[in-house]
Image 1 (cartoon, rainbow, N blue to C red):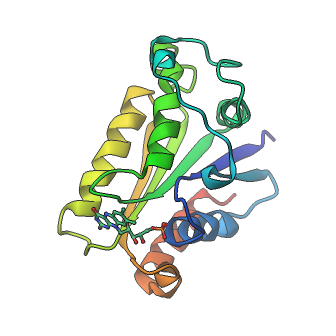
Image 2: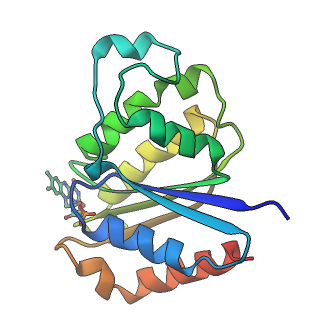
Image 3: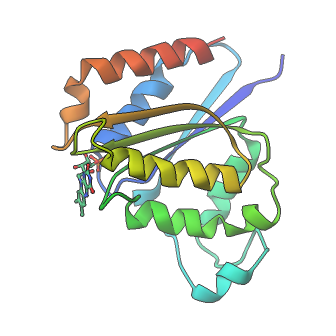
Length: 181
Ligand SMILES: Cc1cc2nc3c(=O)[nH]c(=O)nc-3n(C[C@H](O)[C@H](O)[C@H](O)COP(=O)(O)O)c2cc1C
């Protein structure tokens, strides 16, 4: 039986709510044929050069850790992205990674892979702020032709708040159950 590979990518600059939610989700996805990996962007070197935006080269362009992430993305069946909201947007760490994904827009080699989006913010769910950030991630996924299978927005501000959010945990558990084999 073919393995189902799940890759989590966290774009928070701290080990806080986004990281908690992503790890909680992945931990609860169970099955013999499931392989799970997590990439914490905060631990990696991601360079940026304006000129690269015109490039369609996927590998070896800026000689940093992005090559390794791209390899994992290409191997994955499901890519789960998790990040906080900063001024209604993804934080710079996540955004720089998104910008580096520009080759996947020109060459949609990730087309059809499944995506899960987890977005948190200090605002309340429904006020529109965290949702505005989620909209950015949805558009990004559409542009690189990922197929979004789940979206979760949740409210959490202080560092460990998400771990006390029982609604979030039950949403993540039910998603994990659906993905378990
Ligand atoms: C620079 C900055 C800007 C922020 N802007 C927003 C915002 O626009 N809307 C919001 O709901 N929360 C905002 N927040 C709160 C964070 O989204 C919140 O603290 C979140 O839990 C951080 O997630 P993390 O623990 O995964 O890093 C902001 C926080 C920072 C540091």
